[in-house]
Length: 609
Image (cartoon, rainbow, N blue to C red; front, side, top):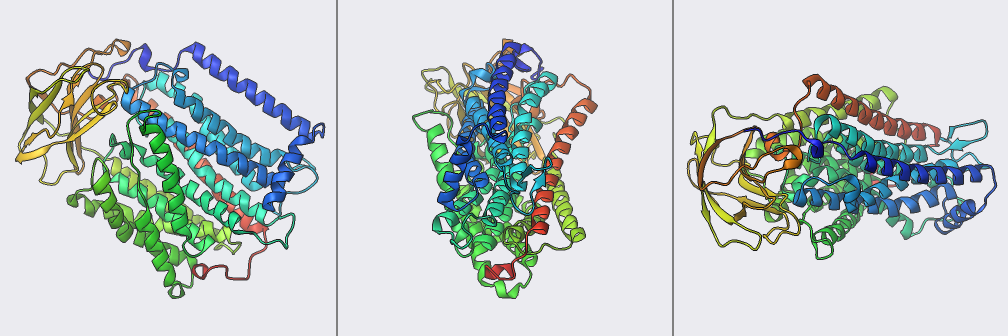
């Protein structure tokens, strides 16, 4: 039985759609370049007047005020498009084409103008050097470091779109958030917030009215920027938010710790008492609005939930009270990261258990902590380094800070690699007996009686034994809006039964999934015929016995495995290299700003040491 097959619909976009998207992007790019050229040659003045008007309001240079205003609108647009896009793939499956998915327009517009926001910071300065760290482009043209980083992150994300089409042409449609080119899209957008924070720092140190103090509104804007960073680092978890993760569950708490340790440590050190609570409240509010828009009556797509980070914020605030015990900020960051990875993660697990599809089993905690603790400590140190720059205090000597950043990247890579290790059991199978229940308006609904062979295939506390039904069509009359996840109830060793009916009709893909430690496998219960990729129907017979196979061959049915293994590895390494270049660029920008601006002798916050 071949479940992963190639075909025309499973590859890249149709050439006419590629041409339309390229042409549209080209026209917009030419128009924006023309505006930039007219501004640089002083043939228009309205752009500078607009930027300076915003700058007077916030007491920031125009080359900071306008880009940050643009960024706020565009990043929220991209976030809505991203969550909507994931929900459409969860509920409907693959797209008929990139132009047939309405969410893609929001993503494209958001990322395109994210890049434009960064470019505006580069283009706007005319008769000034925008700060001590500015980079010279020509003899008289200088650009702020934050603008360069913001534009670079936006360009990195935008490059993911054409590379994604090439990737699908080579390897088929890997319908997963963690496809390498998908990670470029979300990684560029998420990490762009570091560029925003650095650009705001440059603006704060080049205020038009230096003696005019910032009001509470600017403090809130900076807090919202950290909230955006928390959201940006959280989007890597979105498959877990929908309950359709195609990777081991132990990766979810590790990803939560990464986002919390970097963001909350940096926010608390930079903004002071209770700032982490403001950051978390902002992030939760934005994610709630997006979740309601996507999962509510307006779009009516599969719902998602998300981490709250409240426990992590409380841990950081409490540790800040003990700041006199930690005279060095890096130590404070490391200890805070440890607290987030232990107490903060335990508090978050209460929310996960109550709201998420897949709670964290007790048996997973030893490996969970072994991954989360070093990642949390490393993330706390990175957050402290970022805060040190944003506070205008001196960083450690270059060899030390470089070693810390490299160590953090290696720790995160090692933990991720461990989380990606899976084992597919040999000669394991399941006998499934289906009993029909009251059919939905869409078609047949069934309950399942599942007997695993061997009976001790999984232990008493696995991550999940479930039936996943997805991609059934958001407009289908069956329950679940294109997604149903049933956690099976254990009867005896190797014997499990359904707790709710699942659909086996129409375009649904209904799969039995098992994960216990590194064991991760699946088998199809029902899969509709898919002529577009040449796949035949997998029928839902009353009783059948089928072998467990690697989940990827079932959940990523459109993916093609008909290629040399070295080609996939080489393509993945190329994407990894691009990602490491972005991390290097952000590190370079932060170090350049720290070296070029005078260091503060005051102690803005107790936790800064």
